[in-house]
Image (cartoon, rainbow, N blue to C red; front, side):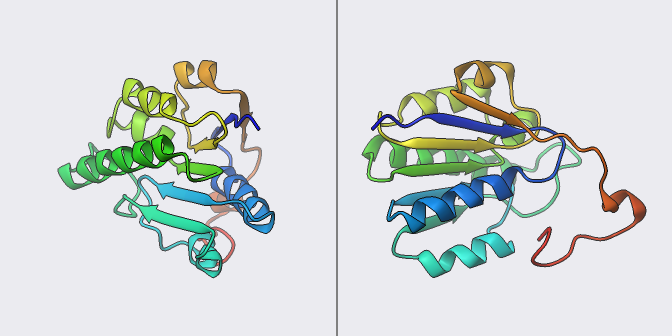
Length: 171
């Protein structure tokens, strides 16, 4: 079976949630999954929930967990690049049916690694591996390379009314 490349991007909520829904579906079907998180630190509720599937789903976080609002610190850059190398080795091995690169688009837009580096990793993908890449500001070259692109567009969000992120809903 051919694996496709998905990109979930846009300024709306739901990119990671969509990817995690696919992870859950794949795990339910008995598929092997690898989830990598760039920028995030692996402590969100969806990642904690995936531990229930530890035999089928592996998770690795390479971020510090903070929002990027200023030029990235060296620790953020080195973590992201370490994560990119890990994903490349996972894709080359071809042992996982589904691989998720959560917030990889954000990592590119903040200069943690280049779009060329990301495209190079994509080329390491085994033919049968499904690959999902999430994050705002997906680069045009990534969109052109992808087989499926979904843009989440914010129309209204209660955050703008002062509602903080809630555990189990946004966190």
